[in-house]
Amino acid sequence: MVAIIEKKRFRDFDWLLALLATGIVFFGTWQIYNAQPTESYWKKQLIGLAISLVLMVAVSFTDYRKLVHFAPAFYLFGLFLLVIVLIPGIGLKINGQRCWIKTPGVGQFQPSEFVKIPTVLMLAYYYGKTRHRGALAWKEILVGIGILALPVGLILLEPDAGQTITYLPLLAVVLFLSSIRMWVVVTALALSTVLIPAAYVVGVKTGKIKNYQQQRIQVILDPENADRKNFGYHTWQSIVTVGKGGLTGTGVGTTDEYSQSRLKFLPEPHTDFIFAVTAETTGFVGCVLLLLAYAVLLSRLLGGARRAPDRAGMLVIMAIVGGLAFQIFINVGMALGILPVIGVPLPLMSAGLSSVLATFIAIGFAVSVQLRRFVN
Image 1: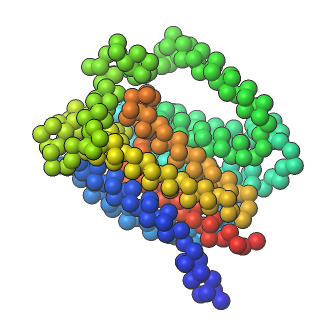
Image 2 (image 1 turned 60 degrees about the vertical axis):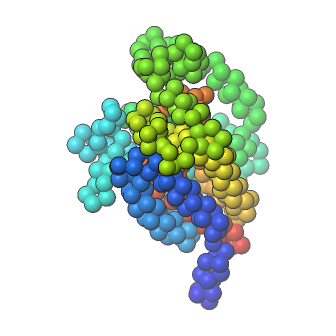
Image 3 (image 1 turned 30 degrees about the vertical axis):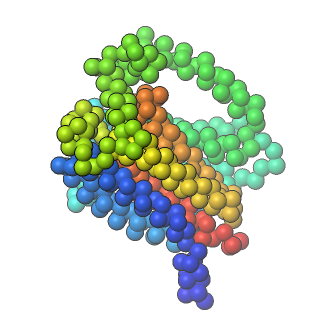
């Protein structure tokens, strides 16, 4: 009987979702090679993909309800990782940020990428257990804010503003689906339009917002008058790289002499600006196809959320969808010059073992929920 059940689950496995994610990684690896052919980033990406596929399958065939049940333990362990990464000698400091832990034989990994998963599980654990007949009470909203505030506060100490922002849609999606009152949503949005500019002004006057951060925002608000040779350089070079691709791109064989990335004009082409590299080599057509692949992937996840057997499973998948969609929007916006550069990777495309592993583990959770959609 067990063998029959496992065979059925293997048959019901969402192969299209797995193939889409794998295909995007392969496409991203090609673009990483186009950006940095003399480096080993693309080789590490393929190694990360192999490990990620194993982890995704392992998580998929694990009952997600058991994982949600142990969410508090996973959450505390995640907070532990975010604490020890701040300790000099354990956490690696790169470009002024102490975000990575170096492990023997594995290399360095970024805890803040992985802690998103236990944070989502903790939110699903709390809101999934509560059966609401009406809207959320203020106490319940504050609990969710507290669950998010702990990892976000620790990540701000690294400091990594980019990762901090990617945590916000996780809570927003869960609260919205947990029957939060609409007047609370409207009030929060209205306050944001007032408080965010006010916080920016206060941050500038007190020195909390550094000069380079101000210039990265200024290049978005007033690109014609921004300093393109200083901190507006990243955005301007990305815009030039995107425009250079035209409709169908420059191709691979013709990029050696004129490529913005290979000639080192475009900073961080294999991570933050991998979308700009994609636009240069494959053009508008390639970018549209990539975004379509993301759209199909997200739609498959949404379909799994609709078929989830319980509230916790639905919340897990929807939080994953919200997080991925938000990261795609932010990264593409950075590359097109409509959003400031804040160091948010493009899921499954940007080079980085931590990001790929965390994304595939999240997809594994979603598949686990789908495989148990007929189980009470």
